[in-house]
Length: 289
Image 1: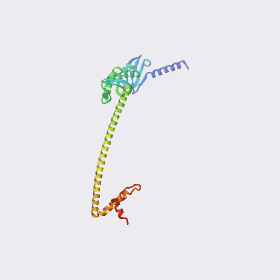
Image 2: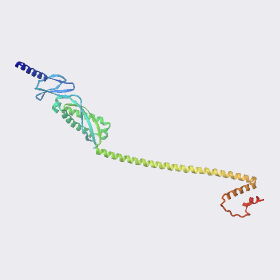
Image 3: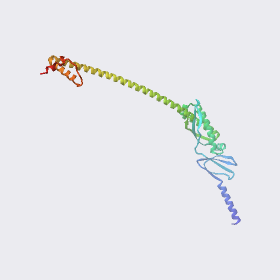
Image 4: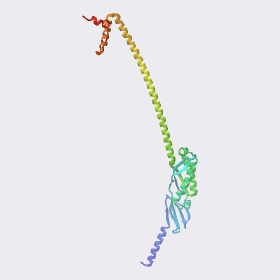
């Protein structure tokens, strides 16, 4: 290869490298700043194809999409000084590329760290203005709106980013408070159980007492009715006996003697000591030939 050809090749390579480094593309999902020896010369490069001076200008690109900051679970005190463990996150994006680069050197990690400190301070302030009930009930949406507004103003001013939304993922009681609440709830449930058992026992005793009373009343009524029926039966029997006696007194006396004989001699082991001239043997004597 001749010297001219070699020079031409080298020049061509240099021109190609210069041309390659003279163009850059910013996509729709990016924001960028153009630097010259570390100093910003174009603060907000729009999406598209652009030209820069090779080896003099540098391009720093940032993700312009919606990004998420997941904060660590932190302890906050409510208005009545009750502790809560709060786990939250924030949605943010780059709004001012120049300010963002100046504040963070274009590093998301630095932006997240500074935004996390601001988020914690805002949450601490807002929870400190509200009671426990307000923090976990209907006031929760208002609390998040206030945190978002405060954090967004500070983030735009300091970091050049827009905080779109802040949400609480979970609100819990600290572990020691959870144990205390659990023990208190257990004691309360045991007390309620004892009260229910006592009421049940009292109710059962009342039911048994009422059943016993009703049983005594029913038995007394049945006994009364039985006595009345027995009295009526005895009266009817007496009337029948009296009528029979009036119709044939001799036969009635004979019938009663037969009943007396049957009852007296029912047990063969019994021994009766009687006077032979007693009326008891009257019909036996008459039956002799």
